[in-house]
Image (cartoon, rainbow, N blue to C red; front, top):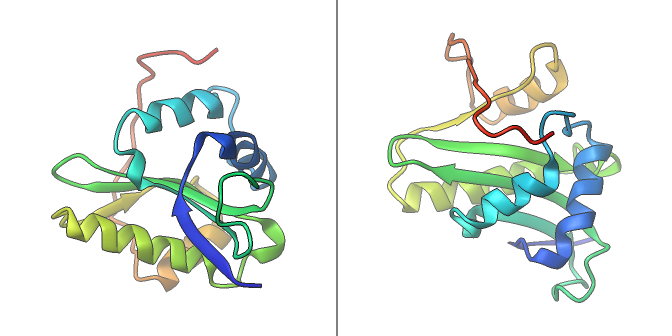
Length: 149
């Protein structure tokens, strides 16, 4: 089946949250619906979904098969919440989404794209390595400024 990449629309929310849950991306300390709202307030054009080709309109949102968020802060680009429906992983859809993000970010003048993968997730690390990403030998630190719970 052919898939179309398009910008996220609000009616996609529950399908995207379900996809992220199916892919194990949701954590108790990050409310995915709040994260969606936050993304829609900053560079919403970098929040993309992939849908089955017959479902180009946002009227039929039950066919979301992949999704991801990207952003550019003027120094570095980031990709978050990249997910492909488990039965379609390995189909090239994740690669297509990453290529789309890379093109959009490069067009914005972004010199480098960063992403984070949870330690121990070797399958996903291998996916990104196959796309040319490498360990920057950095440690990621975080501090919650606005609690979701």
